[in-house]
Length: 54
Image (tube, rainbow, N blue to C red; front, top):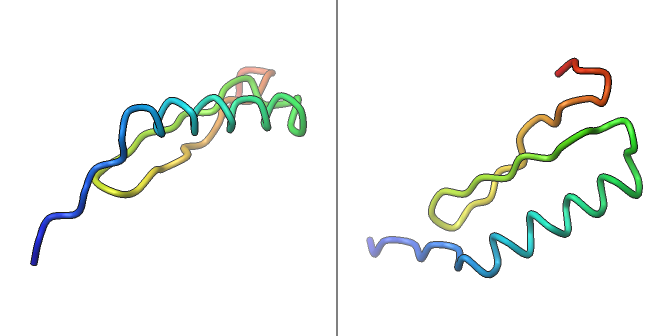
C-alpha cells in the first residue's frame, strides 16, 4: 500500500485561520482553537475556554 500524501502547508494554515475565525464569530466563549495534522488527517483539539478551563 502506498503512503498517503501529507496535507500541504498552505492548506494547514488556511484551515487553522478559518477555524479560528469561525470560533471567534460563533463560539465567543472559546479562547483558542488548536489544529494539528498527521498524514492526510487534520485534528481539531479541545479549545480552551475564555475563563481558563479546558
